[in-house]
Image 1: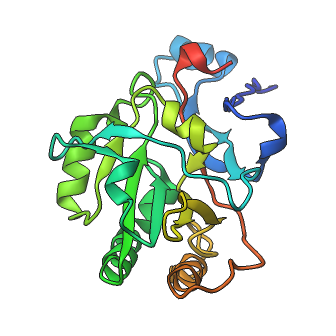
Image 2: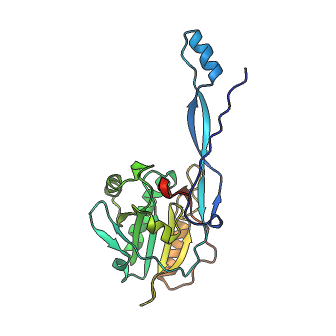
Image 3: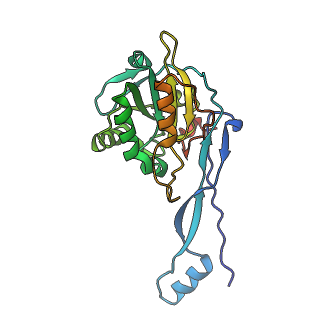
Length: 250
């Protein structure tokens, strides 16, 4: 008996051009299907319908296309936990600023959350400013909404503000396309913040067996704070695509 085939595709929308994105191997999820022929036979015989599992693949994204020296875009965003509004100007007095695009649900972010907190605590004591931003659409992913963000920041004791980019304009201004995505900016005197590092946390990914160390990002921060040159090799951030608002996704 021929079994039914169902093709499921995940469509990833991003604001930046196709040149700035590359589709990589995918995360796997499962869904339960009931083939029509088998279902009909089972119903006639009074038996329960057997379930079949089909793997559905959802794309993960790699970020490129933002050059070193790129000036940090201005932002003014609310922090759901405290109700405070933060702007880029709040970090003017720091020699470096780490901007992280994260969210609550993405498995790539979940994989690193505790170590992101450890890294932030360590380098904030050395003078680094750190801020996290969630830009995911709450229309499609309500679990990334501000109330849940506040709970997340409180439960994990985030030492940095976790800001909500409701319009997604800040993500677009930065050229962010995935979570997590790390932008490290250097401040040299009165000059604006300029991009020093735009790359991965480390080589660890969910289920790849590589320990989480934060080696790549730590090395970049060390170089930034000590006045050295940016790392010559910067591996892109990899993670779930930012979930753009449906009305703005094309």
